[in-house]
Image (cartoon, rainbow over all chains, first blue to last red):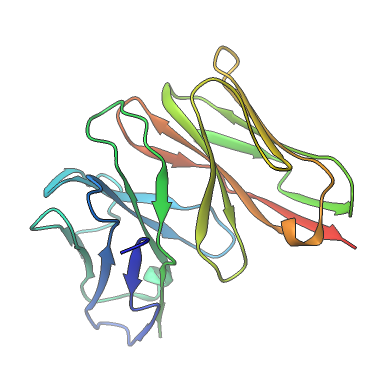
Length: 117
Length: 108
């Protein structure tokens, strides 16, 4: 596709429900990042993939958060047993960069806004 | 601890004014990005810098690696420039750190 695509754009979940957020990066982009953005704040890093390998998941706030990118393209961020504090916009970004230290422009999706009631 | 600090947090300008947004960072970086986010909208990458200066239309971005500082300038500001401007750095370990953003409002 022409850009990074995320779905759903909006998700309302009841506390305790599981949710899955999808990111379809730009074709050929090796690096994929997930971020969480609370209202009025800058994005906070969650996790990073290089192809199918999850190289850094240090930003995932708890073991209820899980991300995968099994074939090195589409990625899914799963949140189990959602809590109200999980309400945020979840942003996905991709970059062509092929190795650590390679500078690559970052392209963002529109985000998935999660509201947990 | 914030690896990236931006100033000011909020900025209101009259149409036509010259605007400067500042970014300081504390980590070793391979690149610095300036991003624009409109309310309810996605994030758009404006610039990616590793040294010197870049210009695109009315936007100019500069970086001083020794001082770990970057500035984004907007000349002849226009109401459509109203948005949140975010500074992000890509560390040597390939992780991105983001500033909290500068909310710019340009009044006609």
